[in-house]
Length: 485
Image (cartoon, rainbow, N blue to C red; front, side, top):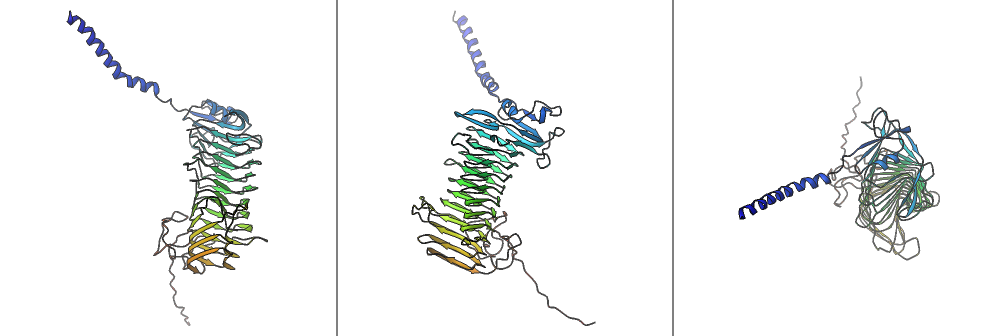
């Protein structure tokens, strides 16, 4: 009797073991990610025989699953549509809330190799809304090889405020924007004419951001991260943008923002023609030239303790004060650190003080005093090298002064050591060194191991002053011998 009972129990137990052994495979199969799909977009929906094919980018985005790639052929894609997001009705050419890659520069006869420089893929909002609205927690979309133009954020809401991000608005998403041209967009009542990045670790790289405009902050780009986030703006050309108030090219709020290896030129603002800084940002290896503002033609540091390393701030104009750099006091009580900086040939126009660096009180009359420290600097070619107003402070170590009408001025405190005078011998670009004595081997060790070009520091027996590091060039002078024949 017991043998008859044991047999079903053994069979049942063996069956349970088989089920449990197969369970991970069943679950794994059920949870397997769907295969990513490549989708195609071409004018008129004529993709040359490939599929799935769409006539506009939004249709492809709507059909896409996370991880898909959307390849877009050359041509102009215009028109806007509305969506409701976070309770707001937003208007844009493309609404993006999923992880997809949108890549331009293709032709309908070649979907394998994009060439965005030869085959323009243009998304044009035609002044009827933003071009891109990108939002969503945890998504990582990519925009690559696109021309983004005609965006207007006037009176259009977003997740935080109205009228920001004329060309591209990014919130929460860790978007990557690369190899794009973002131009002729506006935020006439807000910030970020070209791009507005909010609460995001976005990366903006290898792009041209030009001829955009805004009202408050960031004619080209405005970046506002959350605590602990480190968005990156690198290897871009940011030029010919304008803003009524702060940061003609670039406005950086908050901490941990990284802006490196950008060319920031020919932008215009009231404060910070090239760059406006309102936090502990990191600016490294940037060329900031030919920008214009009333205060801070090149850079305005409004608050925080940003670190500026290996930057060339040259040929900017400050029509009131701080043609190169303008530093004001703030409620934080912190101050910027400038290391290996070339500040040269900045001008004051008809009425400005023509100073390379100006340190002064906050502009709102709150009584906050400013301060700055500069290490391994070249300050050359100004009416006034550095001016520090009463109750404000500057500390300088290892500075080459050259061709300033006055090196130091103002009623504030200026502490300086390891001063040098002489020609830095700039190359024709105004900041690279020719390898002749002047700025070479005179710096102190500030913990910087590369220069503005990524070259090694030091090369010679010491650290060169300014943004560039170069090898000393030796000249051999041979006697002149006259011979009579």
